[in-house]
Image 1 (cartoon, rainbow, N blue to C red):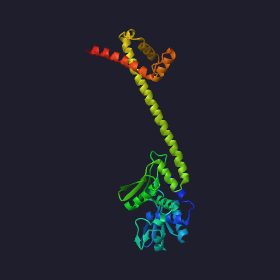
Image 2: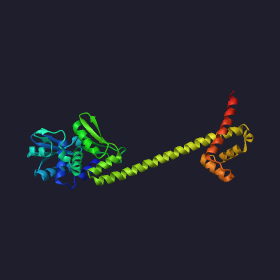
Image 3: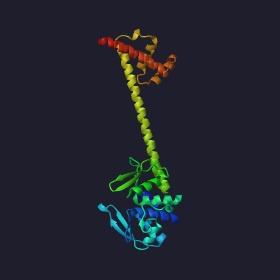
Image 4: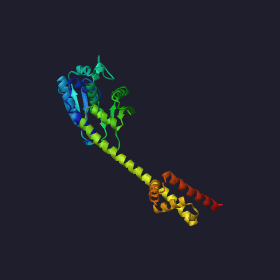
Length: 309
């Protein structure tokens, strides 16, 4: 079962009030309903189909007829709920129509309080929403909606919870989407998919921890590479001085640095400074040590410049 199906299954079993049920059903009919002389609601999730059946029966005392069809390529079923009675009453009550005219967005009373707003968004997600499993490589939640006005309406509702949703046009539909992991988790809380939130957060925290560990390991490896590269350059400069019998001409401070670099070839400048300070009693900092290696580099540069003349 996909993570989307898990979420829909959970929210389809919530205990809700009649006002919440009306808001939820309004969203479902607005998105998934085909209205002519009857109301046909097409659902692709069994748990949601049962939920819609229950809502019609509980609110209006109507028992919809159900047609089950195979999806294309035989992947699951599509459920079509057909309502033949109380059509005008239902459409007016759910703010799908007003004075026999279709409304592009519902009236305010359907989302007038917090619980009704949550219920409305829950209904939209049931029939048009999908969310990636947090185990996948990216976080993504989206709704596929039919008109720009309605997509912007839903996006605004989502953003009343600061979810940073965006709208994009795709062929003949509009997609409202959320990309940030934290915001997706917040949306699941809004629609009261609390078990899904716990799963999502567990996986998100694990992935974030794993990514942080990888970044730290990469950073540590980069630092090690830098230490090796720096030490290798210093050793080559020292070997050049030995090759030219220049060592005895250097002052004692540079000789000590050379002696310890050749003895501790893989140490960082900080480690080497600590070793020299500890073993010789001569206090030297990383900066001071780096200064002496620059002097050695200058000596080698001068020699190489003379050789090329």
